[in-house]
Length: 485
Image (cartoon, rainbow, N blue to C red; front, side, top):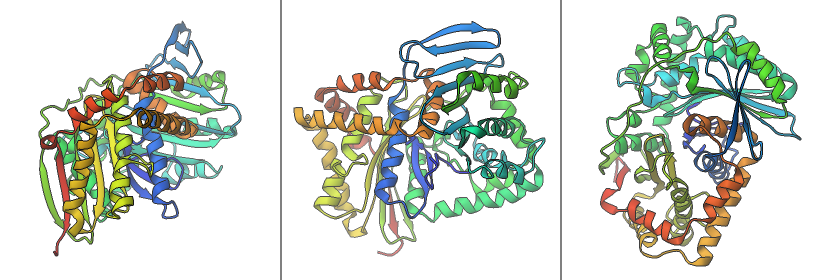
C-alpha cells in the first residue's frame, strides 16, 4: 500500500497527485527501471486529469433502488445513487479487456488530529489485514491469483481502495473491495506487525531527501494546520494505535454520501448496478458529522536544515488556488510552462540545458478543496545552490514582467491539451480522477469542455496570475544542506 497513486506502473507516488494525480501527488517510490523523465510525465498526466476535468451537465431521475444520473450530452459517464447514499460512477469503454474499479472515501490525513496523525494511512494498510470473513493471505491472493492488481493509497483528503482485473473477474474485485472497505476487523496481532512496517516506511522516506523535503515543505507552508502534517504520522503516534482507535476514527469520519464506487471498463451499466445492489445494499447509511478544518492565514517562511547529504535540495513555493477557483486551470497552465514534465519547460531549459546545474527540476500545483500548494523542487551541488535559486526567481520574474507572445501562448495551449488527451487514455488514472472529481466537485468535465476553457486563456490572464502568485516576499523556502561544507 502506498501514500499516492500507484498507476499499475511499478511505482508509488505520494499524495497526488498528487495527479495527479499529481495530486496533490508527488512521487514516493519508483521502479528503478523507469526513467526519471518517464516518471515525471506519467505522474503529471494523472494530476492533469485531477486539476482540469471538473464539470459536466447531467440528467437526474429517480429509480426504484436509488437515483440515476446520466450525462445528457455525450454520456461520458453514468451515476447511480444508492439508498444508503453511496454513489456508483460508471464509464463503459469498448475495446479493452481490463476493468478498473475502486472505492474512494472523502477522508484523508488532513482530517486527523495532532494526537492521531497517521491513522488514515495506517487504516489503509490494515484494510488488507483481515475482514469478518477473510484473513490477510486470502485478501492478497484473491486478486493476485487471477493476474489482477489490488492496491490502495492515502492522500491529504482521500483514502482509496482499488483494483484492476480482466473483465471476467470484475465481480470478484467488486466483492473484495466492498469487503475490505466496510468489514475490516483490525486484528491486534496484525496491527503490531504493520506498525513496524510503517515505521520502516517512514525511515525509508526520511532517508530519501527528495521525498523528505516534499513532506517537510508541507509543514513550512501550512504550519500547524493538519495539511502540514505528514501523511505517515509520527513514530510516536504510529506506536500508539490500537483496534479501538481505528474503529472510532471510522465512526467519526465515514459518511456514505461522501463515498463513491467508480468503474471504468467494458462492463455494462446494468451489470454494475446489479452487483452494487448485491454487495452494497446491506451497507448502512453512515453520516459522520465532522467538519474539515479550513486553512487560513498563510505567511511565508524560510527554513534551512542540515542533513547527511551530498547534494543540496531546495523547495520554493506558497499557498495556491483551491479546486473550485476559476483560476485553477489557467494557473495549472502557467505552472506547466514554468516547470512541467516537458523538457522545454522554462526551468528545465534554464537550469539543466543551459547551465547543467540540476538533473531535474519540477514545478507543481496541487489544489485542495479549500486551498492549494504551488511548489518548485530541485537538487544541486551545494556550491551552485545560491545561483540556482537566483535563476529560479529570475524565471518567475520574467513571467510577471513579460507576457507570452502569440506563438508562445499557442504552443503552451497545444502542449497542455495534448498532455490532457494522453492522460485520459489511461483508464486506471481516468477511474481515479472521476471518483475524486465527483467527490470534490460533484461533476466531471468532458475533454472538449476543458479544451474550450484552455483556448480562452489569454497572455494577460497568465501574466496577472504570475503577478499574484510569484511575489518574492510571499514565497516560502526550505533548503537541505549537507552537514559538512
